[in-house]
Image 1 (cartoon, rainbow, N blue to C red):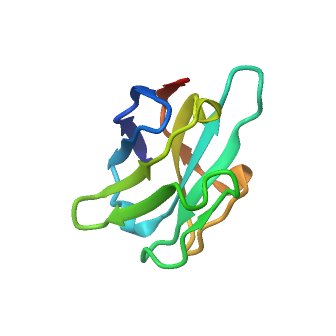
Image 2 (cartoon, rainbow, N blue to C red):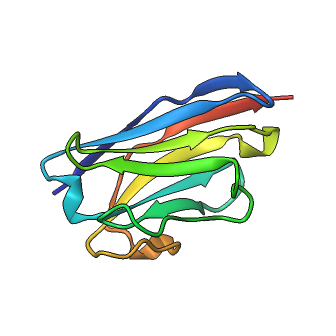
Length: 124
């Protein structure tokens, strides 16, 4: 079992930056491809970014390309999401997820473990 814990959420004005982190207990994250998803009130959970086990070939939702960067530090057992140029429409609960596999995927049903989420609020 993998327990994922997100941190780094908060409130920021439009144009600002936040850095989310995901840490794990129970397993080493280097065994998993990792993803970030978000869910705004009344919306379905949607893909944000994902990264493979080795850190290669990250992919991003079109809505965040060029603004968000996903990275991982397998030695520290953490995955991060650097969010720049934030917009009010980025407001959501952000979730870290792990999947047993090598490749980063955008499909939420392919992920096996989820964190509890961290709130990100961007004001205009």
